[in-house]
Length: 313
Image 1: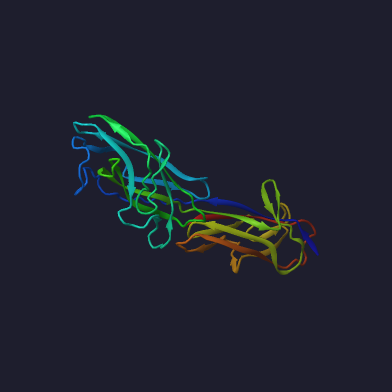
Image 2: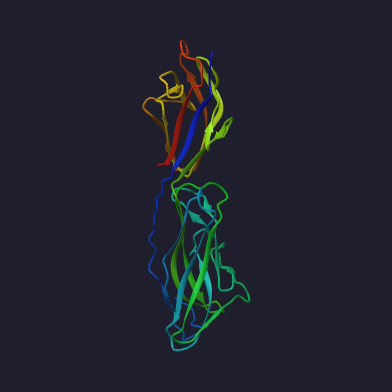
């Protein structure tokens, strides 16, 4: 009977990132068809600003999904202009949508000039009596700054969650003056991470599993490998000793095999486990080993180092 002290899985994570982008429609300007012009000498227009307000978000690296965006509005008319910011979805349901997913992701949109919530939860911004308006003389411009934030309540799948809205400026009496189409979105990265849970200790930063006395045959370890991902992933495993528990630097060894869940891994050449998915994943894999013959082996401590790597696919 022999005793092996350490089987050391060293964990590493390789993160893959996919960035998509949508194309927003062209900028809209003008007084609004069929609406009375409350300020006949006023001509507001959006002068500059991005058409796509996209947040790049890695749920395993970023603490929040939030960004600020600026729009410049200018008075090109010959008279003064008074305006209030409005946002509407043009009849679409509120929320960021991922292609093929019926669920919508809520968000918050705030006009930072007065910390005014302009989120179109009912399809358009709520009218707020006393909300902050701006006044522009001919030729003057105003920078409108918006905070756009998403608060995911659960793990999101990889991809672009988006909604097309119109950012507009109305006269305080509600008459539209100008608007600009903008795509709001959060791009969730294709990424994965993993770790161990159960019975193990850490030595020198590495997770260590004590196998105790080595006896030939299979056993389930009280340790599991878990994987969190925003979609499909690949777990690769390599053995420093090609599937052998070795006594120090000597030629004495005991062969063994490893299974991740119900998948036996080829440690002699290195192996991998692949999961294809378009949905976020939280998977647990119990670890088990199969010890080969210990007959004729010298007494002592035998060990191997396993390196696991996870990558998004």
